[in-house]
Amino acid sequence: MKKPESTKRLKFIVIQLIIIAPIFLALLVYIKHIIDMNSAKREYRKLVEIEEELYTQHEFLLLKKEILNSPDRIEKIATNKLGFVNPDSITFENQNKINLISLDNEKR
Image (cartoon, rainbow, N blue to C red):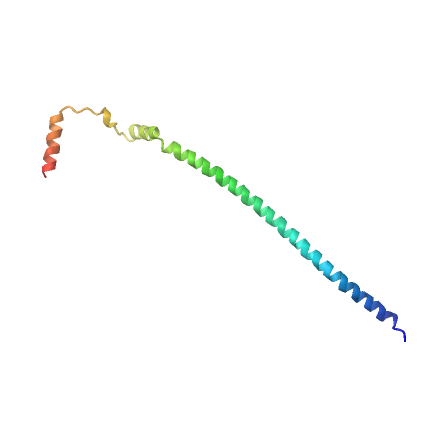
């Protein structure tokens, strides 16, 4: 008894599907992996760019801090803009009067 041609053909198609389906599935998984890797690389590059920008900003801010904290700059602002006087440049006309006032304050 011979099997009908359609049964043989169906069996052949099923065998082909059993062989091809895992290969196709593996190919899809591989392609997904490649897409994910490319996406991760793009994100990594963006993060590196952000890190470089932040490092540059940090260096700039450190330099700015050094300039702003400069003793010469602080003294210049204090004397020119705020009207402060350098204590070494003050001369007292009556030193005894100042001493009496400070002694009087100490007794209280």
